[in-house]
Length: 147
Image 1 (cartoon, rainbow, N blue to C red):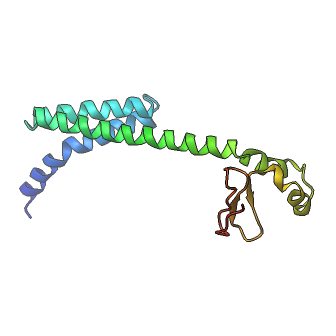
Image 2: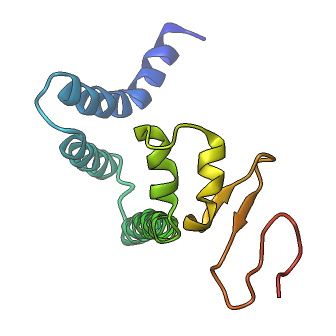
Image 3: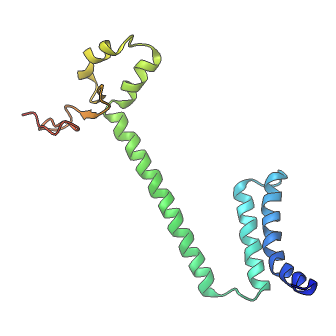
């Protein structure tokens, strides 16, 4: 590879490297936050696409669709996490894990004596049991229904 070919290949990487230095330099330099630096990166890529004459309506539309899909997935992950935490708290999980951490239960036997107060309960075999949560009082892990 000749020196002329090396300089030509350097030209192809110059715009992407400029964008990377621009974004990371603004973050590490304290000029912009991560969100603002991301906006600067988008502007840099947009300008780069104009310079290279690769900007078209279909590319912009495709990029916007991918962005909306990603944002939608992130929002649904947040909704699902909130639902799991809410159900955990409604089942008494916060109280079940909080009391031993605060030292209000001196030993495991005392916690087992008060097991009926906790709908979510982990036994010695680390199986999760759900007690008194439905009309037929089922238990997970033992595969039997109380009736």
